[in-house]
Image 1 (cartoon, rainbow, N blue to C red):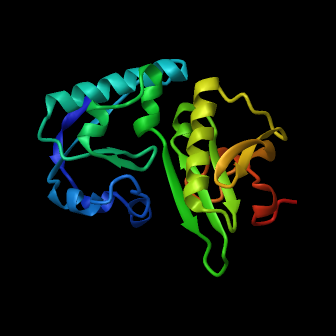
Image 2: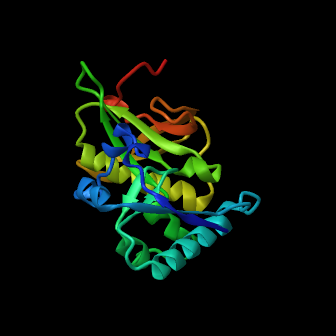
Length: 212
């Protein structure tokens, strides 16, 4: 593991696009305005570990860092685009390697200009060599799709991607996951940056875009 020296925090290093996806921190801009310095930590040279060992190690390292610097205002995870209060690390509801789900995955939401379509994806699993998930859809409640996306991303993480190209997963019915609703999946490149392979989930009659 590696911990760098304190350096001045430059707000512009977090892009406008990234700032639109701070869904779990409504006061994100106020928090960032109060930040003056940053401290970089990383799991340097941990890429050779299996992804769950690496996830557990990174979670341990984050918890140690938060305990060492109680004045820390926030934790920024570039690979997931997620900004968190320190309490979200110190009071992580998950255990073991699954603690990664708290900080390492961000569910993003975009509207497609000029259409009534939406796109929801996860960001963060790619950093572990796993596929993120993506939904291009219309009509469905984005909150329901966001919950579905997180649950599917967590499933891929916990079970080491048990879904193959062309297989189906349980879709949504009245906002709830329904085993009798089958949404096919295929692996492709992401529609929205960063470039990465992910699992596209086709939401049946609510699918948008060209899926030929």
